[in-house]
Length: 330
Ligand code: P6P
Image 1 (tube, rainbow, N blue to C red):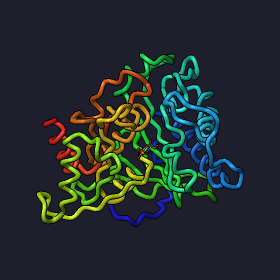
Image 2: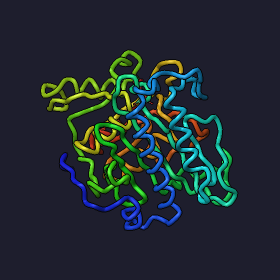
Image 3: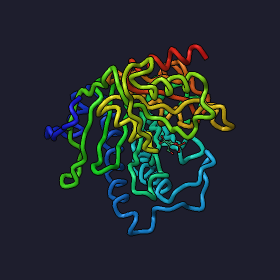
């Protein structure tokens, strides 16, 4: 994919319809986009309003909630919960499944503000969402988990210098940019393709001492560069926000890794299956990449809880295939 994009004039809802998305899904995507536009505006004013720090609250993950974690969750709940199509909602910031409307058919699972540790440094953060076809009136954990593979749409909005959305509603993975003047997202790059090969990896190197041997092998071979078995040099990036690191993969290829570790509490990595790994996997696979948890494709997993964590590697398929091969040997 070229790194230069430009507006095509095609608005989000029109693009969704060209992709064959059901009208109710188009409405949900539109509501999500409106929530993200509101979040983008809130983030720009946050330093002036003293909102970049931590609240007194702790979420079910045991993580201190930032003021913006709570406020962005409230925005998404307010925008989505009243919609007729919403059966229920799952949020990183909500302990349990939140019921929507009695005849709703879809569950929207989301992380309202991914990477919130980046807020205080004014670094890139984002909103990640997944839309599951759970069936009419389903609003319990078992019903949501049973519909894990019925993901009909997935996407994220990256709040960087620009607010960019990357979304898939069943076919293409496409990028849209938010136009503050028009108040809508506009297609800037459709049919994104992740290059099969890459020379850039993304992992938090500070955990090197607790990696499993397969992760350590992959990274050390990358670091050996031209003289090593890979025969080429690699660059490394770690943004501290999954949305930023995965977005880079869409722009120029690469692999994003948050592995299982020999560390209490990180045996299954850190990232959540339902509202981080599964939506990102749909986007990546829709762009010709690969997304795995240890050696299993993320789409083939059977979740056991709504806040379940999974190890993951996703991006350029030839790099992820090597990680898969090494993980099979674990
Ligand atoms: P670490 C943000 O908190 C997040 O959930 C992801 O967005 C990000 O990739 C990861 O955690 C960063 O984790 O261990 O490097 O702080």
